[in-house]
Length: 329
Image (tube, rainbow, N blue to C red; front, top):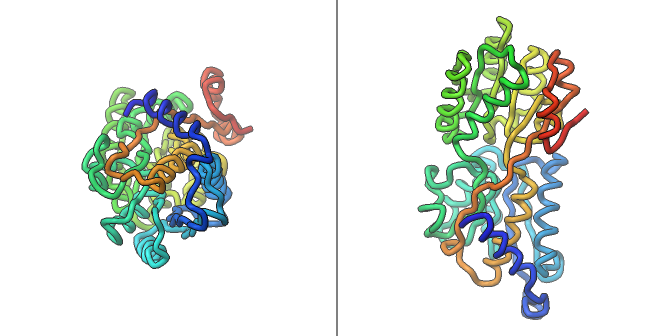
Protein backbone atom coordinates (compact mmCIF):
# COMPACT_ATOMS: atom_id res chain seq x y z
CA UNK A 1 0.00 0.00 0.00
CA UNK A 2 1.37 3.39 -0.97
CA UNK A 3 1.73 6.17 1.58
CA UNK A 4 -0.97 8.29 -0.07
CA UNK A 5 -3.45 5.40 0.08
CA UNK A 6 -2.58 4.75 3.71
CA UNK A 7 -3.05 8.39 4.68
CA UNK A 8 -6.46 8.39 2.97
CA UNK A 9 -7.39 5.25 4.84
CA UNK A 10 -6.16 6.76 8.10
CA UNK A 11 -8.21 9.90 7.58
CA UNK A 12 -11.33 7.84 6.93
CA UNK A 13 -10.76 5.84 10.10
CA UNK A 14 -10.42 8.95 12.24
CA UNK A 15 -13.50 10.51 10.63
CA UNK A 16 -15.86 7.70 11.58
CA UNK A 17 -18.44 8.94 14.11
CA UNK A 18 -17.34 7.76 17.51
CA UNK A 19 -20.89 6.82 18.40
CA UNK A 20 -21.04 4.38 15.50
CA UNK A 21 -17.68 2.96 16.54
CA UNK A 22 -18.52 2.55 20.20
CA UNK A 23 -18.12 -0.86 21.78
CA UNK A 24 -20.89 -2.91 23.26
CA UNK A 25 -21.76 -1.73 26.79
CA UNK A 26 -19.75 -3.49 29.44
CA UNK A 27 -17.33 -5.19 27.06
CA UNK A 28 -13.67 -4.57 27.86
CA UNK A 29 -11.05 -5.35 25.20
CA UNK A 30 -7.47 -6.19 26.12
CA UNK A 31 -4.09 -5.44 24.53
CA UNK A 32 -0.79 -6.99 25.56
CA UNK A 33 2.35 -4.91 24.91
CA UNK A 34 5.86 -6.32 24.58
CA UNK A 35 8.19 -3.30 24.79
CA UNK A 36 11.91 -3.49 24.06
CA UNK A 37 12.99 -0.59 26.27
CA UNK A 38 12.96 -0.56 30.07
CA UNK A 39 10.02 1.04 31.84
CA UNK A 40 12.40 3.65 33.28
CA UNK A 41 13.53 4.75 29.82
CA UNK A 42 11.96 8.15 28.97
CA UNK A 43 11.99 7.32 25.26
CA UNK A 44 9.96 4.19 25.89
CA UNK A 45 7.38 6.18 27.84
CA UNK A 46 7.08 8.70 25.00
CA UNK A 47 6.46 5.94 22.47
CA UNK A 48 3.84 4.18 24.59
CA UNK A 49 2.13 7.50 25.27
CA UNK A 50 1.82 8.04 21.50
CA UNK A 51 0.24 4.59 21.17
CA UNK A 52 -2.29 5.32 23.92
CA UNK A 53 -3.13 8.72 22.46
CA UNK A 54 -3.71 7.12 19.08
CA UNK A 55 -6.17 4.65 20.59
CA UNK A 56 -7.98 7.35 22.53
CA UNK A 57 -8.47 9.42 19.37
CA UNK A 58 -10.10 6.37 17.83
CA UNK A 59 -12.68 6.19 20.61
CA UNK A 60 -11.04 3.83 23.09
CA UNK A 61 -11.14 4.68 26.78
CA UNK A 62 -8.25 3.09 28.62
CA UNK A 63 -9.45 1.80 31.95
CA UNK A 64 -13.04 1.74 30.72
CA UNK A 65 -13.61 -0.21 27.48
CA UNK A 66 -9.92 -1.02 26.99
CA UNK A 67 -7.19 -2.46 29.16
CA UNK A 68 -3.49 -2.51 28.30
CA UNK A 69 -1.04 -4.92 29.96
CA UNK A 70 2.65 -3.98 29.65
CA UNK A 71 5.79 -6.08 29.67
CA UNK A 72 8.89 -3.90 29.49
CA UNK A 73 12.53 -4.69 28.80
CA UNK A 74 11.96 -7.58 26.40
CA UNK A 75 15.40 -7.14 24.83
CA UNK A 76 16.59 -10.74 24.98
CA UNK A 77 14.99 -14.03 23.99
CA UNK A 78 14.52 -15.41 27.49
CA UNK A 79 12.78 -12.32 28.86
CA UNK A 80 10.69 -11.90 25.72
CA UNK A 81 9.48 -15.51 25.80
CA UNK A 82 8.58 -15.26 29.49
CA UNK A 83 6.74 -11.98 28.91
CA UNK A 84 4.82 -13.36 25.92
CA UNK A 85 3.74 -16.39 27.95
CA UNK A 86 2.52 -14.12 30.77
CA UNK A 87 0.49 -11.98 28.39
CA UNK A 88 -1.11 -14.98 26.71
CA UNK A 89 -2.43 -16.15 30.08
CA UNK A 90 -4.31 -12.85 30.28
CA UNK A 91 -6.13 -13.70 27.03
CA UNK A 92 -5.57 -10.38 25.19
CA UNK A 93 -7.45 -9.61 22.00
CA UNK A 94 -4.27 -8.29 20.35
CA UNK A 95 -0.56 -8.42 21.10
CA UNK A 96 1.58 -5.42 20.16
CA UNK A 97 5.25 -6.41 19.81
CA UNK A 98 7.99 -3.80 19.62
CA UNK A 99 11.22 -5.28 18.11
CA UNK A 100 12.17 -8.47 16.31
CA UNK A 101 13.01 -10.23 19.58
CA UNK A 102 9.58 -9.50 21.05
CA UNK A 103 7.83 -10.42 17.81
CA UNK A 104 9.68 -13.73 17.55
CA UNK A 105 8.63 -14.60 21.10
CA UNK A 106 5.00 -13.74 20.35
CA UNK A 107 5.08 -15.66 17.07
CA UNK A 108 6.40 -18.76 18.83
CA UNK A 109 3.81 -18.43 21.58
CA UNK A 110 0.73 -18.25 19.33
CA UNK A 111 -0.20 -18.86 15.73
CA UNK A 112 -3.77 -17.58 16.04
CA UNK A 113 -3.88 -14.50 18.25
CA UNK A 114 -3.56 -11.24 16.24
CA UNK A 115 -0.15 -9.58 16.54
CA UNK A 116 0.80 -6.07 15.44
CA UNK A 117 4.49 -5.21 15.32
CA UNK A 118 6.67 -2.16 14.95
CA UNK A 119 10.43 -1.50 14.83
CA UNK A 120 11.08 -4.65 12.81
CA UNK A 121 13.45 -4.76 9.84
CA UNK A 122 12.93 -7.18 6.94
CA UNK A 123 9.82 -8.93 8.35
CA UNK A 124 9.52 -11.15 5.27
CA UNK A 125 13.15 -12.32 5.36
CA UNK A 126 12.88 -12.97 9.08
CA UNK A 127 9.85 -15.20 8.48
CA UNK A 128 7.22 -13.12 10.25
CA UNK A 129 4.96 -12.53 7.24
CA UNK A 130 4.55 -14.08 3.79
CA UNK A 131 4.79 -10.73 2.01
CA UNK A 132 4.36 -7.05 2.79
CA UNK A 133 1.21 -6.73 0.70
CA UNK A 134 -0.33 -9.98 1.93
CA UNK A 135 0.97 -10.94 5.39
CA UNK A 136 -1.05 -14.15 5.22
CA UNK A 137 -1.24 -15.06 8.90
CA UNK A 138 -1.91 -13.61 12.33
CA UNK A 139 0.86 -10.97 12.11
CA UNK A 140 1.08 -7.54 10.50
CA UNK A 141 2.56 -4.17 11.36
CA UNK A 142 5.16 -1.57 10.49
CA UNK A 143 8.65 -2.29 9.18
CA UNK A 144 11.40 0.00 10.38
CA UNK A 145 14.18 0.36 7.80
CA UNK A 146 15.11 -0.77 4.32
CA UNK A 147 18.49 -2.42 3.82
CA UNK A 148 19.69 0.41 1.59
CA UNK A 149 19.83 2.72 4.62
CA UNK A 150 23.31 1.31 5.25
CA UNK A 151 24.64 3.37 2.35
CA UNK A 152 22.95 6.52 3.67
CA UNK A 153 24.55 6.04 7.08
CA UNK A 154 28.01 5.86 5.55
CA UNK A 155 27.31 8.92 3.38
CA UNK A 156 26.17 10.98 6.36
CA UNK A 157 29.05 9.88 8.56
CA UNK A 158 31.57 10.80 5.88
CA UNK A 159 29.90 14.17 5.34
CA UNK A 160 29.96 15.07 9.03
CA UNK A 161 33.40 13.56 9.65
CA UNK A 162 35.28 13.82 6.32
CA UNK A 163 38.54 12.56 7.86
CA UNK A 164 37.03 9.11 8.49
CA UNK A 165 39.21 6.61 6.62
CA UNK A 166 38.24 3.39 8.42
CA UNK A 167 34.77 2.43 9.54
CA UNK A 168 33.38 -0.50 11.50
CA UNK A 169 29.80 -1.69 11.17
CA UNK A 170 28.76 -2.94 14.63
CA UNK A 171 25.86 -5.39 15.00
CA UNK A 172 24.73 -8.48 16.84
CA UNK A 173 24.00 -11.30 14.33
CA UNK A 174 21.64 -13.06 16.74
CA UNK A 175 19.54 -10.00 17.57
CA UNK A 176 19.77 -8.43 14.12
CA UNK A 177 20.18 -11.03 11.36
CA UNK A 178 19.08 -8.42 8.81
CA UNK A 179 22.22 -6.39 9.57
CA UNK A 180 24.28 -8.42 7.11
CA UNK A 181 22.09 -7.07 4.31
CA UNK A 182 22.36 -3.50 5.64
CA UNK A 183 26.11 -3.94 5.85
CA UNK A 184 26.41 -4.71 2.14
CA UNK A 185 25.01 -1.29 1.24
CA UNK A 186 27.27 0.41 3.78
CA UNK A 187 30.28 -1.39 2.31
CA UNK A 188 29.38 -0.29 -1.22
CA UNK A 189 29.28 3.32 -0.04
CA UNK A 190 32.59 2.89 1.79
CA UNK A 191 34.22 1.64 -1.41
CA UNK A 192 32.92 4.73 -3.21
CA UNK A 193 34.77 6.93 -0.70
CA UNK A 194 37.84 4.63 -0.55
CA UNK A 195 37.09 4.07 3.14
CA UNK A 196 38.41 0.86 4.68
CA UNK A 197 35.41 -1.15 5.85
CA UNK A 198 35.07 -3.93 8.39
CA UNK A 199 32.08 -5.81 9.80
CA UNK A 200 32.23 -5.95 13.58
CA UNK A 201 29.82 -8.54 15.02
CA UNK A 202 29.49 -8.28 18.80
CA UNK A 203 27.95 -10.81 21.16
CA UNK A 204 29.16 -9.61 24.56
CA UNK A 205 29.70 -6.14 26.06
CA UNK A 206 33.45 -6.78 26.24
CA UNK A 207 33.51 -7.16 22.44
CA UNK A 208 32.10 -3.65 22.06
CA UNK A 209 35.18 -2.28 23.80
CA UNK A 210 37.42 -4.44 21.64
CA UNK A 211 35.94 -2.88 18.48
CA UNK A 212 36.36 0.63 19.86
CA UNK A 213 39.96 -0.03 20.83
CA UNK A 214 40.70 -1.36 17.37
CA UNK A 215 39.22 1.73 15.72
CA UNK A 216 41.03 4.15 18.04
CA UNK A 217 44.51 2.77 17.39
CA UNK A 218 44.94 5.10 14.43
CA UNK A 219 43.37 8.42 13.43
CA UNK A 220 40.45 8.33 11.02
CA UNK A 221 38.25 5.73 12.71
CA UNK A 222 34.45 5.84 12.47
CA UNK A 223 31.54 3.69 13.57
CA UNK A 224 28.12 2.67 12.27
CA UNK A 225 25.85 1.04 14.85
CA UNK A 226 23.10 -1.16 13.45
CA UNK A 227 19.84 -1.15 15.44
CA UNK A 228 19.11 -4.39 17.26
CA UNK A 229 18.10 -5.41 20.75
CA UNK A 230 21.73 -5.91 21.81
CA UNK A 231 23.06 -2.52 20.69
CA UNK A 232 19.98 -0.78 22.10
CA UNK A 233 20.44 -2.51 25.46
CA UNK A 234 24.09 -1.42 25.57
CA UNK A 235 23.57 2.05 24.11
CA UNK A 236 25.17 3.87 27.03
CA UNK A 237 28.29 1.72 26.86
CA UNK A 238 28.59 2.29 23.11
CA UNK A 239 28.11 6.05 23.41
CA UNK A 240 30.56 6.36 26.32
CA UNK A 241 33.26 4.32 24.59
CA UNK A 242 32.84 6.24 21.34
CA UNK A 243 33.31 9.50 23.23
CA UNK A 244 36.30 8.18 25.17
CA UNK A 245 37.91 6.97 21.93
CA UNK A 246 37.01 10.18 20.04
CA UNK A 247 35.16 8.18 17.41
CA UNK A 248 32.44 9.75 15.25
CA UNK A 249 29.50 7.34 15.15
CA UNK A 250 26.13 7.21 13.45
CA UNK A 251 23.06 5.43 14.80
CA UNK A 252 19.55 4.60 13.66
CA UNK A 253 17.75 5.81 16.76
CA UNK A 254 17.27 9.32 18.12
CA UNK A 255 17.71 8.26 21.75
CA UNK A 256 21.39 7.43 21.07
CA UNK A 257 21.94 11.07 20.06
CA UNK A 258 19.87 12.41 22.93
CA UNK A 259 22.17 10.48 25.26
CA UNK A 260 25.33 11.95 23.71
CA UNK A 261 25.83 10.21 20.37
CA UNK A 262 26.86 12.24 17.31
CA UNK A 263 24.15 11.67 14.70
CA UNK A 264 21.22 9.41 13.92
CA UNK A 265 19.16 8.72 10.82
CA UNK A 266 16.14 6.47 10.92
CA UNK A 267 12.38 6.15 10.94
CA UNK A 268 10.43 7.93 13.64
CA UNK A 269 9.62 5.45 16.42
CA UNK A 270 6.98 7.64 18.02
CA UNK A 271 5.16 7.98 14.72
CA UNK A 272 5.23 4.20 14.28
CA UNK A 273 3.69 3.64 17.71
CA UNK A 274 0.97 6.15 16.86
CA UNK A 275 0.27 4.40 13.56
CA UNK A 276 0.25 1.00 15.24
CA UNK A 277 -2.79 2.16 17.22
CA UNK A 278 -4.71 2.34 13.94
CA UNK A 279 -4.03 -1.30 13.08
CA UNK A 280 -4.81 -2.43 16.63
CA UNK A 281 -8.09 -0.52 16.45
CA UNK A 282 -9.03 -2.13 13.14
CA UNK A 283 -8.31 -5.61 14.49
CA UNK A 284 -10.30 -4.96 17.65
CA UNK A 285 -13.20 -3.99 15.39
CA UNK A 286 -13.09 -7.23 13.44
CA UNK A 287 -10.46 -7.01 10.70
CA UNK A 288 -7.80 -9.70 10.30
CA UNK A 289 -4.02 -9.15 10.30
CA UNK A 290 -3.79 -11.17 7.08
CA UNK A 291 -5.80 -8.45 5.31
CA UNK A 292 -3.74 -5.51 6.61
CA UNK A 293 -0.59 -4.87 4.53
CA UNK A 294 2.69 -4.34 6.32
CA UNK A 295 3.51 -0.64 6.13
CA UNK A 296 6.99 0.62 5.23
CA UNK A 297 8.47 3.83 6.64
CA UNK A 298 7.77 6.98 4.67
CA UNK A 299 9.63 9.50 6.82
CA UNK A 300 13.14 9.42 8.21
CA UNK A 301 14.49 11.74 10.89
CA UNK A 302 18.00 13.21 10.95
CA UNK A 303 19.15 14.20 14.43
CA UNK A 304 22.51 15.86 15.14
CA UNK A 305 24.22 16.57 18.46
CA UNK A 306 26.31 19.72 18.02
CA UNK A 307 27.81 19.45 21.50
CA UNK A 308 29.19 16.03 20.68
CA UNK A 309 30.42 17.25 17.30
CA UNK A 310 32.31 20.07 19.01
CA UNK A 311 33.88 17.63 21.47
CA UNK A 312 35.08 15.57 18.51
CA UNK A 313 36.47 18.64 16.75
CA UNK A 314 33.90 18.42 13.95
CA UNK A 315 32.11 21.23 12.17
CA UNK A 316 28.69 19.98 11.08
CA UNK A 317 27.97 21.47 7.62
CA UNK A 318 25.35 24.20 7.80
CA UNK A 319 23.15 22.55 5.17
CA UNK A 320 22.96 19.39 7.31
CA UNK A 321 21.96 21.45 10.32
CA UNK A 322 19.22 23.02 8.22
CA UNK A 323 18.07 19.63 6.90
CA UNK A 324 18.08 18.03 10.35
CA UNK A 325 14.73 17.33 11.99
CA UNK A 326 16.36 18.05 15.34
CA UNK A 327 19.61 19.70 16.39
CA UNK A 328 20.71 19.09 19.96
CA UNK A 329 22.92 21.83 21.35
